[in-house]
Length: 136
Image 1 (cartoon, rainbow, N blue to C red):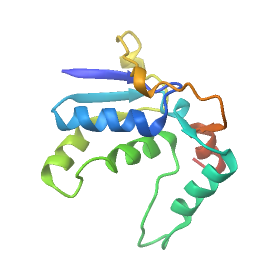
Image 2: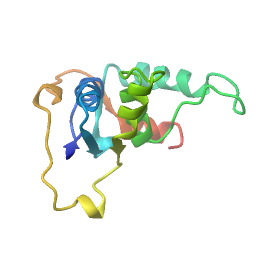
Image 3: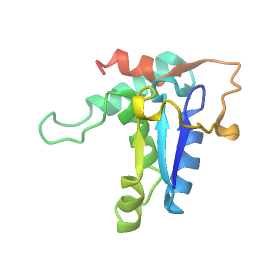
């Protein structure tokens, strides 16, 4: 059973926690529109936070942090899984994240997670903007 989740205007962390929980229950999940997911906070501070993660370490030996929005979203979900155990790795393999809606998923019914939907009235930034800043 495959579930398609639309990340448009959803808070990235809240969406990731719901996705991680469902992955651990055995669901196969596809997240679309990852570049339209929201990270709350002052955009300058958020970009600085992600910049530190990306620039950390050695370019040859790591640690490596993704620059593309779909990979950033996938990494956020990975942080909420027990990735160093076989159960977490298997759950992570059941996750697919796409930048926009791919052709094969155009007609599919998409689900939105209500608790992750952004009702922010203060500063926020889209994952796509963060990615553009760092060459993604």
